[in-house]
Image (cartoon, rainbow, N blue to C red; front, side, top):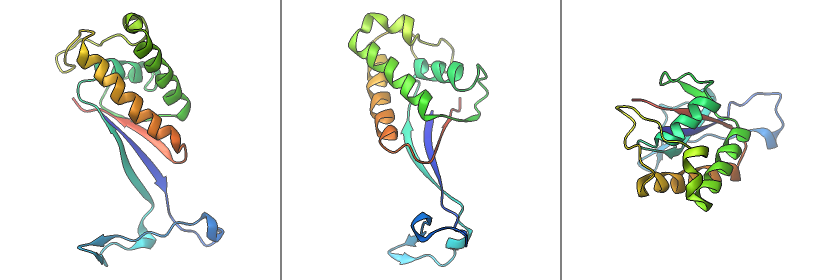
Amino acid sequence: MYLYKKTYVKRHEWQKPEETYEVTVKKGGEIDETIKPERVSEVREDMGYWRKANAIHGWIVDNVQSGKDECQTSWFSIEKMRELLELVNKVLDSRIMAPDLLPVLEGFFFGGDEYDEYYFETLEDTKKILTECLKDPQGDYYYHSSW
């Protein structure tokens, strides 16, 4: 389960200087001439990774992917991130609310289905990931899972 951010960096002649990005890629401390900065369109940053965080995956499937779970990549809006973070915080504040607010998702590839320490550790990880993303809401965020 991955969350990543894409930032569009392609330069256009009509852009103001303060709107443009300069892309430089180095290998071994030296500029890599095989990567042409003018051909780079976007930069992808890995923002988060989960392993068998089935409650988080289930929420994203239902609320971001319209119930469709086909290991697809889906745009994850800032608003949806805020919603999920709010739920995570509520459950961390009152663990008894976990089954109602962020229920586990059962299945062969989904890991444990208990509200145990691993479940709450994944919520703490999710809180850190989403908080970091929300510090910089520029760019586009995407969720991808692979089972």
